[in-house]
Length: 379
Image: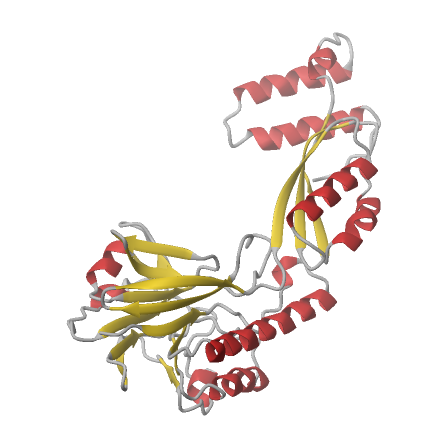
């Protein structure tokens, strides 16, 4: 049997507000536009590579925020590739609820949407390919739906499209849990997964049985690394895949080790060096400051932002440094409130459980700042 060229994508989350990312309104608007641009590039790649089947693994748009304009945009591009069969499996952010555009909008003839909560088989004419899928019709799915699927069709290529979370053998999830064993035993030649935003592959021996393509664009600061889509040739004897990077911007989460002698300018210089070494002006960086700072020298966030702002599209800061107090020296002060406070807090820290220590350390350093006349700044 000949191989079939397919593309796998999903998790675009068109119209996501980016409110949980702390992006300013202007940049949030740019990111929403860039999500649309990513989908346009996907359709361009379908044409350039003569893709026969496009698998879209859910969360194409945000049900709560999408408008008819969003759907016209998606459908208009899909209608431009009439020779490519398109399959969509709605996910937890774009479920096929009764009022969903998946039900109410007239989609292009080459588009099939899995709207039912049980598996449906669609035969692709002329290719000897079956595509199996189901759609989310509610906000949570805790049942292991893939266990209901038992494919017995050795003469055809069987693809499964599913928006789900891979869990351990005894794991639970409200995001349609599946296990590696479920994927191995359902009889599919390949399973195209959506939901996880980073590329992930699952194998049985040397054979790829399932993959997450991830999201074409990162959606928050935790989604570091590459983002893109999958292009593959697949047959009964196996498959050959390429990961195609798509993201206009990347997120980077980096650590800067602070020393007591470093002022704000030196910290900013260290951050700028990391920006140049890792990314560029279009990228978004989150820096975690760790180590010790001079208690008498306060970090100036506004100065820092001005110093690094021209090197990237956005820089965020998490200050986890601690003041460089000599605790042993302070504890030796016999007849002072400061010495007594340090001794009490060190005793509490020594006896505390691991979960309690971070809070006690904060209390220790806040107390020291207050007792030594420093400005107390929460972190």
